[in-house]
Length: 404
Image (tube, rainbow, N blue to C red; front, side, top):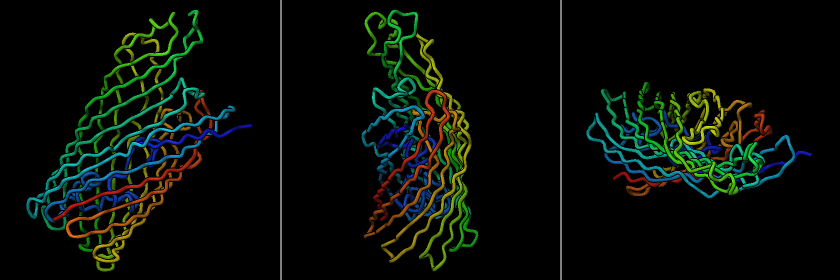
């Protein structure tokens, strides 16, 4: 009889609220509006959603916040077995600062985590040779400049300095003909690197006060991460065959393109938004840690991810000048094919339902958003560990803003 493997992960992203490695909850207002923002964000958080939007800042806008992500992921293996695990909370923070220099020029900087993943399995996990623990995180420093050549048109461009870290822990079984064949140990692989890229966007008020269109492109980023491989737990006769050593990993973070529309009827009390986003996930072909001293243990984790579009819709209604309520919906398909879906980066198609609210008092404001993420049943035919993934996630985003 098949049993269900339940993995509860509290993480900074990954098998999280967005498909692949993406984190798209980078502002409390947008989180409540289904993570839309290509055409509708006109405050400091536009540094992430569309840099052209920072021209909407009156003079100064500062935002600080974060998202608490709780994922409850289930896995039913084709072979009998029950495992459970938990990992600690790691809410991804973000911060934005924008200053409007004059009527035509604004500048700012944002710091956020656009990609991440964190999963942890028990030490006796049946797929321990594939992964016991994996963590991926990127930290993006994004200086931004925006220009409005005419009142109805806004252009923005940014520079990305991205620091990426990748950590994997997995089991290694001693191979024959060693007298200790079948004995097990572990290896912890940790690498990091800086990468650089750019982003650019445009917003156009095609019907001023009523209809805005937007587009935003964020470039891919190539990283050649370097670090260390630490081996442990091997029996004495074979331990010298597993020395600690340098390790490297090449990874290409994907480019993305967003297209958005914002419709504001009812004297600007109601705002309706819709975005479609394309992500070039096909850059994630494999994860291959290259060991310097023992290359015979280099085992690529083939991914062959596929490019995907996701669709988002949202809305905001201003109950009063100080209070706004929000809602949204997202369809976000996984980029992982069935035959490469593995426990190092578990994934599934997602349906996301969001609600939120914002309240302004004096020069300060608070924006809160909640997303219920339904991970659809996702079949894996990955030969070493076939089965089915599904589950749900809860995302709580909170942003504090200051605009004197």
